[in-house]
Length: 421
Image 1 (cartoon, rainbow, N blue to C red):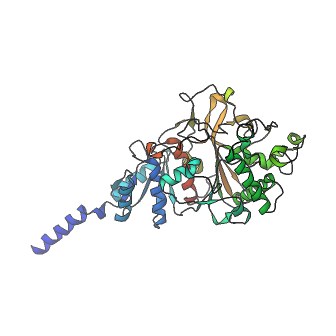
Image 2 (image 1 turned 120 degrees about the vertical axis):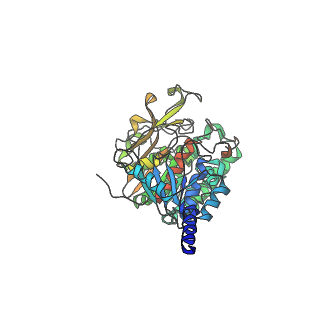
């Protein structure tokens, strides 16, 4: 009788123990209280040497990992919604995802990506959407700039974000409006001193060298992400290699009058057949960016649509578009939207406004690496102006626009799968 009673007690303990509920599921649909911090949790869990399953297209791209008390405590501290489920429940989810008819898949995250942000050291985290959301999500990153890249420090990193930089050496083309402002003059002075220190006669020459180092980083298997003006100016600098497109107020001598005819579009990542702006007083680099007068939209009706990819056949763009919303609020920047007619045909379009003929979010490969370009400055600040107060992400913890940035952060953590085609 004693042995039977003991066996019954052990059996009841086994099935009532928290150890039986062995998987933490972080839902990423509308039930999630803080989507942005959820990415930070996934990153942190990887740092504890615990693999994470990214459940593509399952409840908005949910995360799952082994249940451990210390992991659950961190979820509670950071205010992220989660449930603890049994092995049987999780196996049922995996069976659902594995159904050939279901547009879902499992991406194993195994590595903690080492993240770098290319940005002037004087910039604050709120000057850039990526550094803002990385800080909010508690994902660590290093700030590097021209000196570190020229001195070959870039290969230490897996993922690189380009702050809204001007890679053409024209100081953001702020000359007409801000050349008398102390911050503009200081930026120009610092840039010229840096170029001289690193052995270049012009800032534009330094920026071209940086652009080519970043291109080599991508070719070697790096993950490149850029927003706003860092997208089009990066490609413009590549196309203009060996051609002076910078006027005298920026570098002391006149631009090549035949610069447009000398552009080489075979060197670019994303764009072709564009025409550069030759007017130094115009706040625009080229016709890549859709102009305000061409965009009959305002804050109330400016949206773009995310494309739905096949999770089992196109895992990379599927990862990059995970979201709880497919319609994303538009937002402006110095480079707001890419003119679709100037985007190379091999580029993977992930978000666009078809009616306006503009692309907002796109992806491509270069050699062994990948790049992603995202138009606009701040997904929760429609028209961010110089000197405006920073966005408070505590007010936007479920931002679909910011989620697209964080998809790119976790992308390098994914275990590579064999191609199905």
